[in-house]
Image 1 (spheres, rainbow, N blue to C red):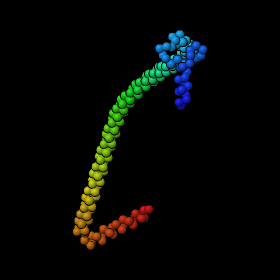
Image 2 (cartoon, helix red, strand yellow):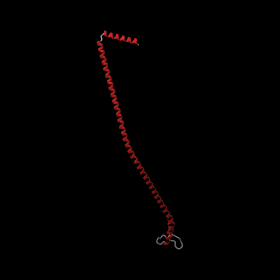
Image 3 (cartoon, rainbow, N blue to C red):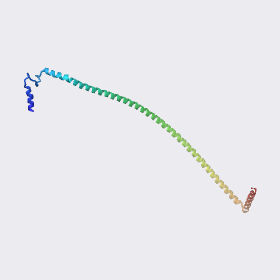
Image 4 (cartoon, rainbow, N blue to C red):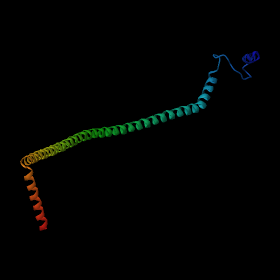
Length: 183
């Protein structure tokens, strides 16, 4: 490492008349040499730097265009979503109104159905009452008839004696006999 630094230091001691070397003294450096070096750097570096800046500018512009397109797409989707939301809200309102009217219609139908069922039950009740009344009347008639028949039989049995009983039987037998002869 010492050899390398010594060789750079020895370059500074060479004479400037016949050789080429590095002048490490900044104040003694020739302004013309600096302007040549800067000119060469600017001439060759200008294209590279302008290409880099142009590429950077194109990427920035492309990013901005993409962002604008994305923003426009997002705005378009937002508008579509708003339109769909309005449609859905109108549909929901329509369903709500139809639902309420459907509920009212079902309520009215249910009330009418219940009223009809109550009328039918009332009719069945009245028919059942009439049937039970007729049955009770028939039962009472049958009992009255049985009591009247028993009363009549009791009266006949108490009024009839054996001789009257035998004469009635004989008369009935005679009556049957004559009927038989007629046939």
